[in-house]
Image 1 (tube, rainbow, N blue to C red):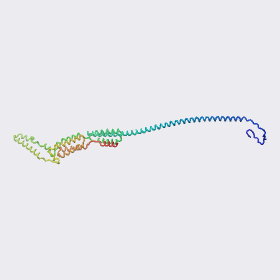
Image 2: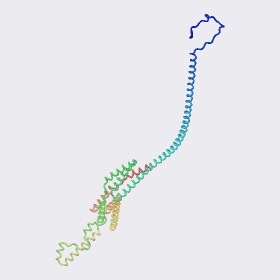
Image 3: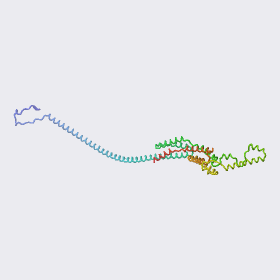
Image 4: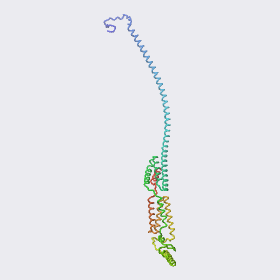
Length: 367
C-alpha cells in the first residue's frame, strides 16, 4: 500500500499493452509545495547572498581597518624608532655629561681634600708660629702667662676647626698647660737684689796673700796722734817738757809697730795660685769677679738661667781659691752664691717641647 492507495499485484490485472494512458493532472498540493520550496530556496539564497555581502563588507572594513592600523602601527613604530634614536642620542649625551660630572666631582673632591689638607697645614703652621712667639715672649718676660694664653687660644682653634688629625696636638697642649700651671715663676727682682749684695761685699773680702781687713782697721795710721786717755789728761798738768817726751815716745812706738807689721806678716795660703798673686793684683782680681757677676746679672735679665748659674759657679770657685775661706764675709758670699745657683737651676726657662714636637709630627705625616 502506497501513499495514494492500496497496491494491486501485477498478476491480478490483465496486461493491456494496447490501451493508451492518458496523463493525469498533477495534484494542486504538489505545485504549491514546489512553489514554496522554490520561494524558500530563493529566500535562502537571497539571505545567504546578503550574509555573504555583509561578510564581504565586514571583511573589507576589517581589512581596511587592519591596513589603517598597520599603517598607524608602522607610523608609530617609525616614531618609536625615531624616539629610540633620539633617546639613544640623549642617553649618549647624558652619559657624556655624567662622565664630565663624574670627572668634575672627582676633581672637586680632590680639590676639597687638598683644601682640607692645606687648611690643616696652614693651621698647624700658624699654631707652631704662635707657640714659638709665645716661647720668645716668655724668655723675655720670664713669665708663663704668654705660654698659657697661647696654649688656650690654640686649643680653642683646634676645637673649632674639628680636625681629627690634630687630636694628638691638642693632648700635648693639655699636658704642657698642666705643667706650666704647676711651674713656679722666677723672682727676678730678688735674684738681682742678692746679686747686687754680693757685688757690694766683694770689695770687703780679704785676700789670702794680703793683710786682713780687720787688722788694717785695728792698727792706727802712721804718724797719727794717739787718742787721748785719762793718763794723758792727768799728764796734761805735768810740766810741758815731760809731755813732749811722752808724745814723742808714743809716736815713735806707733811708727815702729807699723813698720814691723809691714816687714813681717804671717798668713795661711791654701793654694799656689793665691801665693803667686801679687798684692797689687788683688784689684784686678776683684774687678774681674765683678765683671763675671755683671755677666750673670745680664744673663738673668735675659732669662738665660743656665749661663747665669755657670758664671756664678766661676765666681764661687775664684773666691774659694784666692780669698780667705774662714772669713765671715767670705762665708756669707759663698753661701749666697750657692743659693743663687740652686735657685737658677731649679727654675729653668719654661718651654713647649711636647706641643712643638706634636705639631712637627703632624706636619711630617701630611707631607
